[in-house]
Length: 168
Image 1 (cartoon, one colour):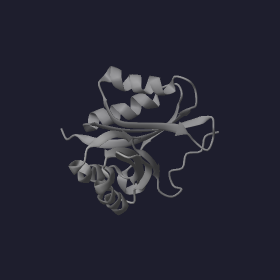
Image 2 (cartoon, helix red, strand yellow):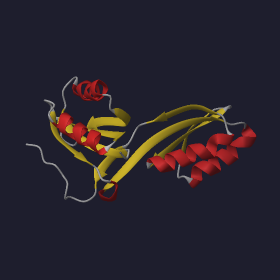
Image 3 (cartoon, rainbow, N blue to C red):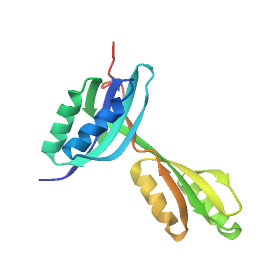
C-alpha cells in the first residue's frame, strides 16, 4: 500500500493531559507523528492541535476514528493541502565569522528570514514558511556549521470560512 502524509487538525477541550492522551494513542498503536503543535484558540476553552503523520490509507482512517473517540476531542479532520495553509517556524543558529556574516545574511534575506540574534561567533535566523521552504533554507546553509536548530512543527488552517468549526 501507498504511504501517505496527512495533516490533522484536532480541536480539544483545554484540559490538562489532553495532549498526552492523544500522543499516547499514537504510541500505543505504533503510529508515527512527524510533527505536532498545539496552542489555545480564540476561545480559551479550546486548544487546536495540528499533527502531521504518515501511514497507509487504513492507518490514516484508524487515526481519525480513534482520536475522534477520545474524551476531550471536539473535532478532528484532515487539512487537505489544496484547501489549507500550512506554516512552520525555524530558528537556526549558524557559526559565522565576521567575513561570513554578509553571505549568511544574504541567504536569510532570500528566504525572508530575520536575523534575531548576533554574537561575535554566530547568527540566529528566524525563518517562517511551509516545510519545504524551511528544508530548502537549511540545505543552503549546509556550507556553514549549524550550531543549533529548533522547529515548531506544522501549524495549519483551512482556507476561507467553509470549514470553520464552531464549538458551543
